[in-house]
Length: 423
Image (cartoon, rainbow, N blue to C red; front, side):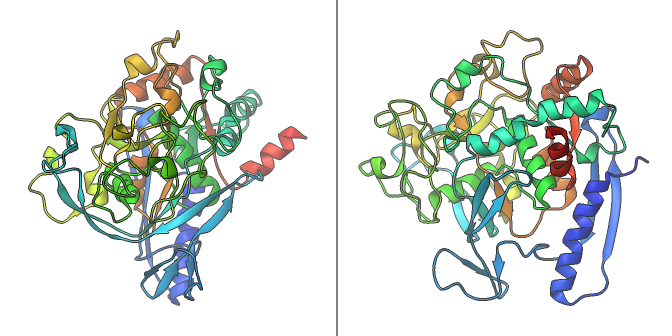
C-alpha cells in the first residue's frame, strides 16, 4: 500500500484537533486508506475522520453578529470572512449561505422552460459559504505562477512528486499559447479570470485548499442554482422578468468591452454578486440533454447526490450566462454545455491543452469557489479536486511525460520556499 501524502495527514489532523478542542473532546477515531487505480495519475489518497460538524472555526462566531449576513447553525453563527492567499497580498471573501430545500431546475409551466432544465426535483442543500464574487485575475494569477515555480523545483531535483505524495500535488496551467486572445478584453486584477477549463478550475481549488487548510471546491449544479436563486422561484433572482437586469448583471447590451470588474453590480438576496452574467461559471456536472431525468423519482436528494461526475471533459455544465449573452441566457436555470472541439479550435497542440481554451465563448467562462459548512470526507472532496474525465487524465499524463506540464507539491511551507526562490 502506498503511503499517504504528509500535507494531507497534517491537514486532516489539524482539522480534527480544532474540532475536538472546540467541543472539549479528548478521543476520536482517525483512519487512513488508499484507493488504487490502474492509472498512477488517477490514484487518489483517501483519509477519513470520524467526526461530526465543522472542523474549523473560520467564518464561525459564537455571538450573533450585530449586522450583515449571517446564518445560525448548531447554536453558532456562520459569518462572512476574508482570506489572504498565503504568500501574497491577494484576498477573497466568502459569504455564508443558509441551508434549505428547493425545486432544482425549471418546470414545464415556466414559459422559458427548456427540456434540459427539467424535470424539477427537490434537493436539500446544507449550509455553506460561497465566494462573494467570481475568481478574478489577481487570485488566479497566483495559481498560474506555479508552472514556472514547479519547473524550477524539478530542475533542481527538489520537492519531487511521486506515487507516495501525489495526494499533496497539483498541476499548474502552462503559459498561455495566445495571451492576446485571453487578455483581449483586459487582465485587470479585479476582472474575472476566463478561458480556464473545468480541470484547471478544479486544480485551483485543490491548491487553495492545501495552501489554506480549508476545503474549497467547485459546486454541483444544484448548489450553484440554489446560491443563484437565493430563495427565489422566478426566472431571475430579482424577479419574473428582465426589466431590472441592468442593476444586477453584465450582459450583451451593457458590457461593451468584455467582462467588468467583479462585484460592480447589485448582489442577490444572499449577498452574491454576478451570479447572473459577467462570466458563466463552472460546475462539476457532466452535461446531458435529458437534464435532471436521471434524478427523477429519487427522494431525499442531497446536493452532492446531484453531481453527475464527468466521464469526458466535454460537454460539462457552465451556469449563469456571460457578458456576451442575451438576458434569457442568464436565467437561473439555463445550462450551457461546454464544447472542447469549438472552445479549443485554435489550439495547435496535440493533445490539446487540459488547462486552457483558445476560442469563444470561453472568454465568457470563469468560476467561483464554494466551501461546505461540514467538510466533505476525503473520498468525496477528491472527486471535486481531481478529474474523472478519462481523456483529461490521458492529456495530463501525456503533457507531463513530454515535459510540457508537471506536478508540484502544495503545503504550508510552499509560500516561504517560493519567497526564497525569488530572493
